[in-house]
Each structure stands twice: as structure tokens, then as C-alpha cells.
Amino acid sequence: MATNQNLHKVAAVIGAGPAGLYAAKQLAANGVRVALINRDIKPGGLAEYGIYHSKHKMKQGLRKQFRKILELPEINYYGNVMVGQDSGLSLEDLREMGFQAIMVAVGAQGTKWLGLPGEDLNGVYHAKDIVYHYNRLPPFSTQPFLIGDRVALIGVGNVMIDIAHWVIRDLKADEVVAVARRGPQEVKFTKKEMENVANNLDQAALEAEIERVKERMQAVGQDPQAAKDFILSALPKAKEPVSDSRFLFQFLSSPCRIIGDEDGNVTGLEVEDTKLVPRNGDTKARSLETKRILDVDTVVFCIGDKVDDEFGLPVQWNEFVKHPEPEYPVNDVSFEAYDHEVEEPVEGVFVSGWSREASSGLVGVARKDGENGAEALSQYLEKQAPVNNTDEVIKKLEQILRENFDAVVTKEDIKKLEDAEMDEAQKLGVESYKMNSNEEMLAAIGKQTVPGD
Ligand SMILES: Cc1cc2nc3c(=O)[nH]c(=O)nc-3n(C[C@H](O)[C@H](O)[C@H](O)COP(=O)(O)OP(=O)(O)OC[C@H]3O[C@@H](n4cnc5c(N)ncnc54)[C@H](O)[C@@H]3O)c2cc1C
Ligand SMILES: NC(=O)c1ccc[n+]([C@@H]2O[C@H](COP(=O)([O-])OP(=O)(O)OC[C@H]3O[C@@H](n4cnc5c(N)ncnc54)[C@H](OP(=O)(O)O)[C@@H]3O)[C@@H](O)[C@H]2O)c1
Image (tube, rainbow, N blue to C red; front, side, top):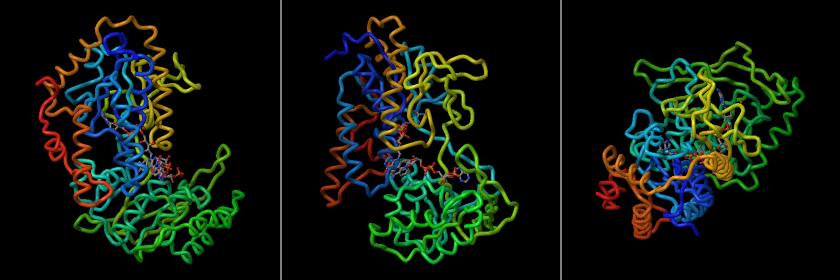
């Protein structure tokens, strides 16, 4: 195996979610020295802080794989470091230090605001923040999320089901209504995930709702019965209910305004009726201009996320811009960051995972994207002159981290943290235990400064 002394290529990977971790692993396998820099103390991204908190087995399995990646000698890990144009470490800084290429795998950290009146009312949330909250990602872990009795969830994907799962089984709200701009045939959640909440479905209300929209479905050749059967197919293996929450759907309803009282609290959600129009083998929702008000006190947008506009890469249509004619395509996909205003690539910068395509696919998809992105980046590196001493580049990074960041976390620290959390779980007799704040995690590691201090 290559040792770090005889590696003559060096790259930074930003973000240690599935895409960044597997990109780092692939780069290491290709003989590249890697600095893996992560905003959160812990690696894992949404695998740690997105996947539903009670999926212990899946999370433990993924953690085990991530641990193995961090053990690779070619990879240095720097957690608790936010990269960005306004942070203590930017893409330009990394290039100046001598990193020959950078893989941006920071996920999709921006929020998709729709610009609706009332979006700023108390009781309006975005799914990602709530998911971070119940998965204990600081600072969301300690922020209050005031969920009422009647909760509207906008969007009908698996994230909506995760939020419904939490609101129905943990919070036991009276009513949860999933609001879809399209119809029952276009729901995006899977049967498997629906099994978590299917026993709370108000079946009579579902029947009535499908009856209400069936003509609009039939107008585009859809089969209302088949769509209903899919939703109900989750019933045979559905989890036993633990609350009386009623789970409802409102189809062909696009949110247009959130209504509040004089104290700024949500009192309703106005939706516009829509119809379906065929578009490229799929359908689009088109407004019918008629409106209705749903009686809810909380609104959660579960409509996917966008990339962080402030990160320091050009953004268009909620995504980092990719080179339209990539020099290093893998499977016809472009991983190369591109400045569309000057029509030039962002030299040496690549994107993968949800940073390449926001809110798209499972962990396995992000993993493959990270690996393919790493192959594209490796092709680019082949054209770069070798670096005499990659240690020098790593040392420069550690120097800047010491100067600009308070407590940078290494892979050894992560091991200590995992041990401390495992001890705590054992003491409490629970399957998994997570510390709630960065302070608590840093105290468990006994860590306040970066390596070398
Ligand atoms: C609610 C939810 C539930 C899900 N459940 C499942 C599931 O059950 N099964 C499944 O297979 N998939 C699930 N997924 C999908 C899966 O989590 C994603 O496919 C995958 O995590 C995307 O990986 P990524 O590495 O691209 O981004 P992320 O996982 O988002 O990782 C991004 C990483 O970048 C870091 N970062 C962000 N900004 C910066 C910055 N400025 N500087 C440095 N680091 C930064 C973050 O700390 C994070 O570690 C779920 C997704 C969501 C939203
Ligand atoms: N357990 C799991 O396996 C799990 C759990 C969570 C997430 N995930 C994965 O993570 C990815 C992201 O999930 P997701 O649920 O966020 O995305 P998704 O599956 O794409 O669903 C997003 C939903 O939001 C709606 N939407 C988008 N923009 C909208 C707008 N402007 N107005 C109204 N509605 C809008 C979409 O409707 P349209 O269809 O009309 O666009 C769709 O119903 C998916 O690949 C998902 O499978 C997996």
C-alpha cells in the first residue's frame, strides 16, 4: 500500500457525508493524499443526521463503513470546520495552500423558500431543520420546534413520511395532512416507508379524497383505483399504531399562502386547486385559480432542498453549475464546477452527491456519485505535475485551521467520541446515544484546539 511519503497528488474533499466519504476512499485508492474537511464534528452527513433516528441497524452499519474509511492512512479528517467564502477557510485558500483539486460534497444545505406570504410565521418549518433536530445535530438539536395539533406537510416524498412518522408516533398530533400539488399517482414515497404510518391513515377520508380528484386523474388517463391501491398496499405490514393521529391527504392542491393571527402564529394554509397536464411522459400541476383554506396550525415544507448560495461556487436553478461540456465525464455525467457567467470551468473544483444534484436518491446513490466524482477528479490530477511533498500542503492547512478555528476534530477524536457515546448508551440501556451539543462532544474528546498545538 502507498504510504503518505510516496503520494505525490493531494486533494481536499469538503463534506464527509456519504458522497464525500466515498470520494475520499476512491481518491485514496487512486494514490491521492486527501484532506477531508467537514462542517459537523461527526462524519456521515444525512446518513447520521437525516436517516430516521430509530433506524439503528442501518445507521450502525453505515457508521461501521465510515469508520473504516477514516482509518485509511491516506485520509486526514478535520471535523468542526465550515468551508465557505465568509468562513476562515475558502476554496481559494485551499488552492493557495497547494491542494491540486477540490471535491465539493457538502450536500444541499440551502432552503427552498417558495416566496409565499406567511412563510415567516411561527409554526412554519422546513423538513431538513426538523430532521436535524430529532437526529440531534447541533445547533438544531437544542432549538425548539413548536409543532401544533393540526400539521400540514407540503410534498409527498419519503422526507414527508419521515416527518409524518415523527409527528404521528413521537408527538402524537391530532391530525397530519400531506398536501400534494399533483395527484395520488404522483406520490413519491415508497410502500416500505409508508408502512411506518399507514395504520394512522383515515381510510374513509382517503376514499373521499380520491373520489374528489378522480375526474382530473381520468382526464390524463390515470387509474384512481390503482393509485389508491398503492397507498393502501402498505397496510398489511404497517406498524402497530401508537397514537390516534389522523393521517390525511389533500391532492391537486398547491400551497399559495400561510395565514396567521395577530401574534404571528399559523392559523391556516391556503391552497390553490390544480389539474394535471401531460408533460414529456410525466405530468405537471396547473392552477385552476380556485382556492381553499386548510385548518392547520403548523406547516412543514418537505419539498427538497437546494445548495448553499453562499458557499462560493456559482449557483443556477438551486444547483451548483456544472460544466455543460465536461473534460472528464464519467458515465456522461459532469462533475466539474463551472462559472456560467464567464463560461469557464472553476479550475480544479468538482462536485458530487447532493451538491451535484440536490435532494436526489438514497445513500447508495450518493456513494456511487462520490466514487464517480473521484474518478473524474483523478483524471484531472493525472494532468497535473506531481507535488514533491504533500506533507507541506497538509501542514499549511493545519496552520490555517489553528489560526482560524477553535476546536478541529481529528479521526482519533471521532473514535474517542464514539467510545464515549457507546459507554453512555450502555449505561442508559439504550441502543444508541448521541450528545446534544458541540460543547458536550468536545468535552468528551477533551479537545479544544487543532493538532500540533
Ligand atoms: C430526511 C432524510 C432521510 C433520509 N433517509 C434515508 C434512508 O433512510 N435511507 C437512505 O438510503 N437514504 C436516506 N436519505 C438520503 C441520504 O441521506 C442522502 O442520499 C445522502 O446523505 C446524501 O449524501 P451527500 O454526501 O451528498 O450529502 P450529505 O449527507 O448532506 O452530507 C454533506 C456533508 O457536508 C458537510 N458540509 C455541509 N456544508 C459544509 C461546509 N460549508 N463546509 C464543510 N462541510 C460541509 C456536512 O457536515 C455533511 O457532513 C435521507 C435523506 C433525508 C433528507
Ligand atoms: N427512508 C428513505 O429511504 C428515505 C427517507 C427520506 C428521503 N429519502 C430520499 O431522499 C430524497 C429526497 O426526498 P424528498 O422527499 O425530499 O424528495 P422527493 O421524493 O423528490 O419529494 C419531494 C416532494 O415535494 C414536492 N414539491 C417539490 N417542490 C414543490 C413545490 N414547489 N410545491 C409543492 N410541492 C413541491 C414534490 O412534488 P412533485 O412530485 O410534484 O415535484 C414531491 O412530492 C429522495 O430520493 C428520497 O427517496 C429516502
